[in-house]
Length: 384
Image 1 (cartoon, rainbow, N blue to C red):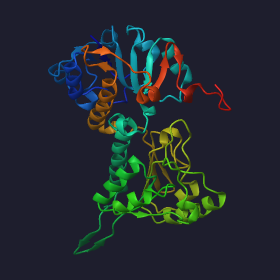
Image 2 (cartoon, rainbow, N blue to C red):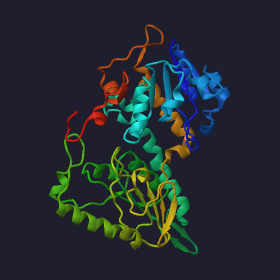
Image 3 (spheres, rainbow, N blue to C red):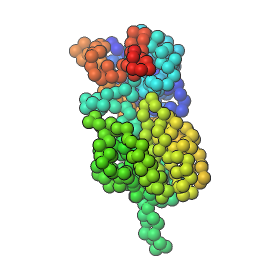
Image 4 (spheres, rainbow, N blue to C red):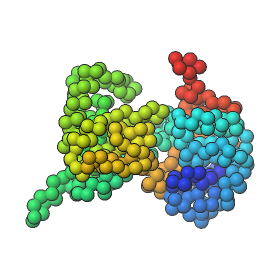
């Protein structure tokens, strides 16, 4: 029988949990033994009683929860020292943040754990149900608009009253990925006048399908600025200058800006300069979803709300975590779909990992005491 352990998160500011009562029930139906630490789901409003009703064992303390575990599921990367008692070669699956704290990552490998990074999930059709970045970014995009509207201090929709008309707020979304699209949809539902920009020409249709206006210098270079795989091409210095001028002028008139350009493992690109912030009207709001990587805005401070020349800049690094119940439910489903690939259904909950599976290969970070993912083992110059 496989033992799946879900300890409470080590970071007390993290309210998400890697298991929901729904997925606990699915794992136990497969014949797995599920051990969840008492109180682990409290931040997401999942009670110990709900986990027990789903067939999980609720255990006091992390050491007892992890004892004999074959699979450990967490939200954030745990410290290697906190995983004593798990079976050698046990699977660890989490949002690993694989490009930070290389020493901590190596310690997990040396501890003999088989480590999977959910951020490395391949963008293929069969892995969509396992796509953690998308499930969490969707909620972050929604929460960014809700937080911005609450902080804005004015109404978002146009209102016609006997005392006069209240104009609709202007909302600008920079970056049209999953978070950006949800931000557009949410801002439109709240009645804002929404515009959006992205370096990929294919996003124009997506923006317009949500009744927002696309903002970009749409010359011949822009029309060819995307690879066949859907990635943006590097633009010429001339194009960048024209685009920067257009965006700079557009920013001046905006009430709310949401920035979403975040690339794992790289510093966030600067989309809004200090001068652009200072060109905005007092009372305007910027929500920077890339704060954890330095921010898309020049004045962003991670996990802080600052005011710069009358403009509020919000740099929360875990907006999805503020919707812990929803975020945990979606994340737990991502993990269940992923772990389900590793379970031998005929032998009733025996591990049967296909190391040649594209999903397994794409997410595997450590095995046999060593880091194995090419993005973490490649040296400068592309050589290993």
